[in-house]
Image (cartoon, rainbow, N blue to C red):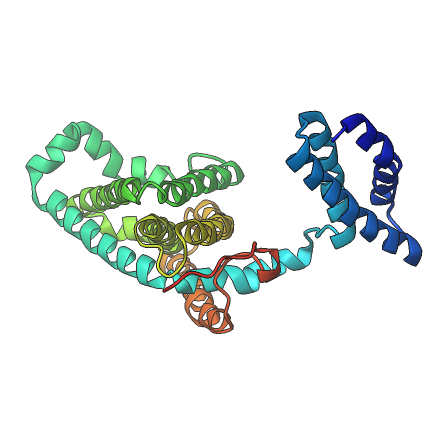
Length: 334
């Protein structure tokens, strides 16, 4: 095939397709012409690729075909409706589907933290290995390190600092999941140790009630969000090992998109916990009132995840993007 003759013969068609593809509104006749030209230029591209490969011409025709396809099919734009659908359908469904991962992880983490706390509080030699006696006394005394932590910075900046730190921990759990989930276990163990050591030190100083009064208002929901992130990360890691009836690529694509969506949802949840930690935890409210706010936030989240999420999942929602936005999957044998 003579490329010069081929280009000269079809140049006007390509220019016309480019012109029509750029228009925002087309008449009925122009729409028909656009479709016909798109099909024709697609054939031209196939001819060049098979008979006379030329990188420059192939690049030009590929761009034309892509632009024509966008004009023919219409480009989908995101809207506030997508955000509403995510928080009312996709996110709660994803939380519900992952429940058998994050609920056991949460229970096991709390039990391990309690065990670490008991070990630290009942073994002076363990406490001595954590720091000098003066340092530990300074941390646990009234108005000391643990208590001052919640009020030593302006509430707004503290809320932002807490939010970004917790969001980073959740993101680590989600991202590391693809590495067979092994780094997620490390993040969880680090979280368990930090919580257990704090509980143990304050308990040994006879100030466990104060510590729980400062921890529970924000900690219930905050820890739950971390457990959810860890559960989703571990499930993503298990998908690498066992994709189920899907191809491994399809399974990772679906679970990966769900994990990315989960990170957005958890960022919103952690924004709430950051606000509680900055404005409620150090406030002058009675301890029972502060804890009640934390318990209420936790109960609302669990209802959202397990009750509303169950309804969303029963409707076929899996936490992925809308079905119309997914690529077609090749059927595979179960």
